[in-house]
Image 1 (spheres, rainbow, N blue to C red):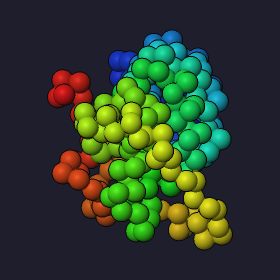
Image 2 (cartoon, helix red, strand yellow):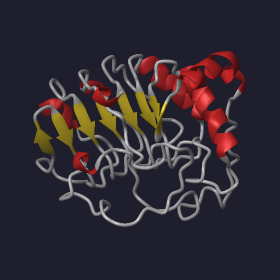
Image 3 (cartoon, rainbow, N blue to C red):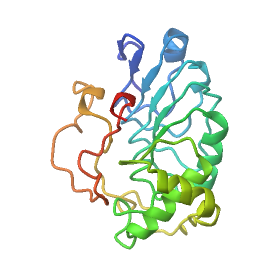
Length: 232
């Protein structure tokens, strides 16, 4: 685990990236929890979010490229509007969405790319655009306030479909197998985040540069980044 003092703080943004920590260091909440509005814990080995309860003012939480699984739970985060969980070990979509809905009622931006719970080409070549669209309807049924999901903006039509049919679009949790549970076969071993590169600290991990081999669907695929409020 990385030693205290290796965090990067800029205004109300706290970054603790690429430290191989399996838990959130207690000193982070003790020093910054009272004012941090953006917390980036990507490229670690997190398996739980114990300690996150110390960040009551969070508006953005970045958890990409960790080892968070189906038992992940969130403390109350009333101001959280942006959450990214890309490239983790989540396969139980229903449980995750219930936890997020309860903890973050103000959430507007969510990204789950690279998890088995998100059925697209990132995790399985057997999944197609229809599978992914049904997933979107179910997520929006559970989180009706979302404006942006994964790599694209939520449309008015999607919201309408989610209201009328979303409850019947539940994504079945994939069956576990020795092959699927292998760390070398669950998904491509590449870092991923839909956020602009400026949100990552290039001095603290090596996953910034390089060609991306992921395939995305839809006309909004280029860029794969969040649309900020001033772009809506």
